[in-house]
Image (tube, rainbow, N blue to C red; front, top):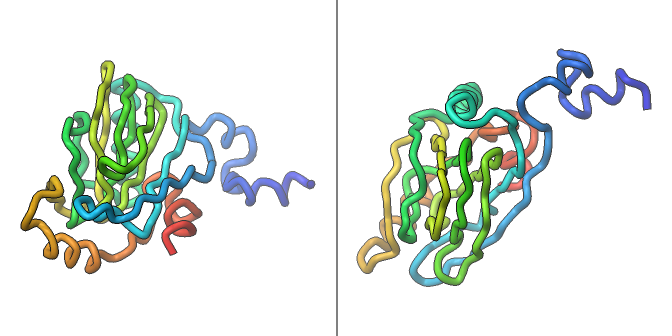
Length: 192
């Protein structure tokens, strides 16, 4: 394949191949994890997306890179911290989590979901309604953000939360950008 035909395929046409190699993130499609409503945690018809080793910066530089990169893709209202140690989900916004330090074992999708290990360099895009919980972590540092800077709530799957949380989730628009890939791929192709 000729270079001019190859560069647009990897999103590097404006910079040239050398700049694409130096860029602090990798162009990739995410792994998709699907979780069904378990009666307590609503989960989502949209898959949770996992980008493995998506960026190279670590610690404070990694956190700053994540904040800037997410904001450039209109995912804002960011924070730095970890993941709650109890099952929870958000009904008023989708969420992105970028791991800039350490490792964690997360339980995704509620009690009937899946345990997934994440480490610095990973990014998770969590649809509204999908449960997540920190089972254990070592030196974990995460940046979280929301499409359009939306406000978020915390729900634990307790009696009385639904059906209002289901209505909130159903009313949410699909984001216009992927927090990692922007306007090319990611949730734009997998959240149909």
